[in-house]
Length: 527
Ligand SMILES: Cc1cc2nc3c(=O)[nH]c(=O)nc-3n(C[C@H](O)[C@H](O)[C@H](O)COP(=O)(O)OP(=O)(O)OC[C@H]3O[C@@H](n4cnc5c(N)ncnc54)[C@H](O)[C@@H]3O)c2cc1C
Image 1 (cartoon, rainbow, N blue to C red):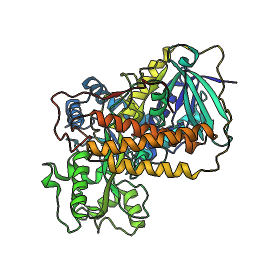
Image 2: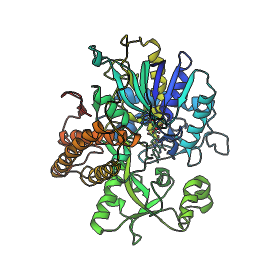
Image 3: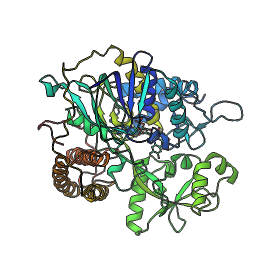
């Protein structure tokens, strides 16, 4: 039996939950999330949400900083609407019970981050995302019209194309990871809020859930995807054997942290007039270059010149985490390296979150709305998550119900239990390593071609494995990860210039005209 709802949301981060809360005012909402509800990138965000709130700031300045970071590829209309909606979305967060830091006068405390010309980042200590996640989940749990299904991973989107219609989307097959049952969930509107793609790379600041599932599922039913070559590498992730993925927020440089080499020398002045406050891509490339030149494992972020009490109060989470690893950041510089952090491209949408497939919406990090262009300005992504989930929740109100009379249940076929799970982990590891080496911070035609050859072999293997064995969440993620890697490689191969986050040795200059890259399934469905 297919389950019916008005709105099916895939993902429980800022975009999915804010959408659910607003849409639940006019319909029934099912949110499925593949692990625990708080396993999201949102929960890991440190810095905060960018919005124009300071007397010396203006919408024009925030727009201009965003356009400058986006390197010619931002959609000005989308930038303006996000920036203009910023203060109202911050107000909404407060109304939802999100705590935000205040200065001694009681006004919201505004942090400054790289490439922002003003203080404009609202935050809660250095765990802003955790606070937003907490408040949104609390509100969702109280709402009678929202059903939250954890440990439910969306497998594939339901498309009318399978029933002889156009490829309109009417829901998804969803695997209950605990029971192994695949549920069919039909909806008037299906909303991808499935987050980013950081796990495509071996070094990433992202949690395990960031495997690009939404982008892969949308691509498989023919949705256009855009700008997938623009992967943001965060310049400063903690370098320590026991740290896992731990981000050292941009806000540390915003508050006066200085990058140094192991010998204590500064180096950013050789790369950009804004030195350590230059935009992320400039800083990440500079560090990558210094590490390649010297063969060192890491560079250092020095906070020791700042007041120790201020550092402890402003960055309690980072301070405690580093101290736990034997680094007192008020006395010692922090060893850091770059890592994959944010996907600027995604499923192409209009300014309401609608994709090129009727009935399918994409919001948050999995979407390419035109806000970020070729490079994201720090703290604009939580803002985008709020703005577009609000806009999509208003747009879906009128969505018509489209579905075939009889929906085919998931076919389990002849698949058997896998006795060879090592194949999944080995393929996973191989993809993430060559993506780092060949499709990382500095690219070239040769490196991209090597990556292309490898990903095609691996995708064939994964396809066979997918047909033969029962699906598990690990196998689904691997299948999606491999497809997203392929899409990133193809998008990068098509861009014959260096722009924003895409830097290639073979075309170091920018072309006179800035164009989005677009990629869409044209050769029949492949897994
Ligand atoms: C360490 C770190 C720090 C950051 N700091 C900031 C910051 O200070 N300011 C800022 O603006 N941005 C920051 N970002 C980026 C920002 O956190 C993300 O872009 C944003 O949270 C994305 O929100 P989202 O709702 O789109 O996705 P997420 O919060 O990532 O949520 C995605 C959800 O989708 C679920 N999901 C995925 N695939 C499936 C599937 N197949 N089936 C079911 N569920 C699925 C996941 O389990 C998860 O629940 C940071 C990111 C990281 C990693």
